[in-house]
Each structure stands twice: as structure tokens, then as C-alpha cells.
Length: 324
Image (cartoon, rainbow, N blue to C red; front, side, top):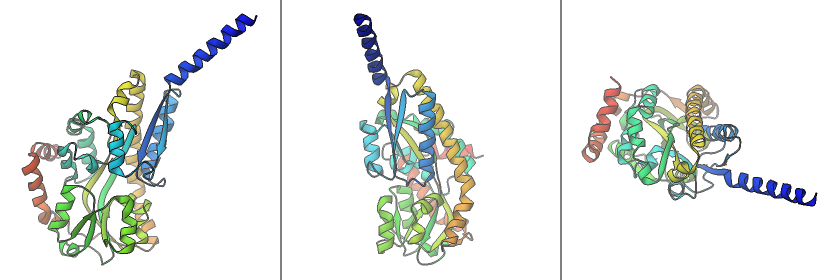
């Protein structure tokens, strides 16, 4: 009897050890607050991956820059310290410069066009360039159309931007755009932006509506102008070696759930945007929609020319052709 019990205990311990070895934890990091749709996407991804793999893959979420700023998180994902990172696509263009075509001002006339390009052959071609840099693209969630906020007054025409100390991200296209508009661009991580606006280091910035609300920039910015000057995608990237270490079934689940999570988050972003604008207005922001988009497009045309001169016109032409 003692021998049987001993054998049973050994078998149970061996099974437990096997289960422990078979379980994979994925660390998912992003910079947005927990109130942002990036966290909504992350929670959906966690829940569905864990359910569909019967717990063989678990997901631990680190929001609000807990694992560092965007650059640090991307480095972490490439090295394998972090398994999945979600960040603005602009933060990856240093690795794959051609991806900067998606960031060009007034590139996408509407969201549907952006989705079709990002999810279709053009986006897949860009995605195929990332594994050589240690990353696997899981999808391109929505950041949204970028709009300008400032403390001087409504922005309706290009001249209204001149002289503003404008916080910019690391997108060369947007830096060049604001320089052409006569602003004084200053690159700052988003985690430092609230304080910079509060203390007057910068007096203007551009972000999609959801970011303005979730980071509470309305508390330190008076005017919101719906310039919609650039569509801004996020990129959800996984360490390529970690993805390849999963079983074929687990890989299929991760890819399927990521696609569903991106679709869900994009849908919510569209559905909630009007309510977000109303919430910002109720909190005291002055919002204007009377923006002369054609005038802005004329001024920033050289941004496209500069991108093409450096990176060629293949991706830009493909995107334009896809819209016709």
C-alpha cells in the first residue's frame, strides 16, 4: 500500500512539474493609464488567451509605463525582458523607416482606409520587416486621429500654429510638419507631458482624443482644435523568439485573439469619441471644428517630399493607390 501511495505521489508531482513547465507567462506592457482603451484591449487579450489556451498561456499586464517609457519597453520586448509591448507605431520607425509612411500628415482620409492599408498587403509587407529586429507584429490597434491642443487660442488656419512651443513625439514627419507651420517642436515622452504643459515648458501638443482625456491634458490645456492632421496607429508587438517558443496551437490563439482585440478596440474608439469630446467640453475645454484642412495640407506637402527623398516612394504610392 505504501509503495502504491508513493508511486501515486510521484506521478502527481511529475504531472505538477510538467504543468508548471508547460505554462507560459506573457508580460504585456503599455504606457497608457488604466482608463485608456489600450488597457481595455489588454484585459480582453489576457482573458481570451488564458481561456482559449486553458491556462497554458497567462498574461500579466503592466500599464501606465510601469516597465519604462516607450523606448525602454520596446528595447525590453526586443531583448525578451518584456514579451508584448503596445506603443505608437512612430516609436518603431527607427527600426523600419518605411513604416513612417503611415505617419505622414493627411495620409488617410478616413479610418476605414487606414484599417484596410494596415491590415492588408501593405501593412503585412511592413510587418514582415520586424522579425529581423526581434519583434513579431500582432496587430495595429487604434491611437486615432491627432488633434492639436494649446493654451493660446483656437487653431483654424496654419498661421494659428506659428510660435507655439509644441510638444512632439519622435515622428520625423510630425516634427517636420510643425516646423513648417512655424511652431517650436520639442520632443518629450508622453509620461512627462502633463508636467511640461502645467509648468509652461510647452504650451501645445497633439494627440488623439482618447489620449487627451485619459492623460487629463484638459486640466492643463484650454483649447482643443479638431485638426485631424494625421492618423496615428498603435503597434502591438511580441518578442519574436517568445512567439516562436509557443506551440502551434498557442500561436494560433495569440494571433486570433490579437486580431479580435484590435477590432474591438478600434470599434470602441469610434463609438466613444463623440462622448469623449463632450466630456472634455464639459470639463471646460473649448473645442472648434472649423479647421481649414486644405490650407494645412498645402503647407505640409514638403513633409511627404522629404520622406520620399529618404525612403523612396513605393510605400507612399501603394497607400495612395489603395485609396483609389
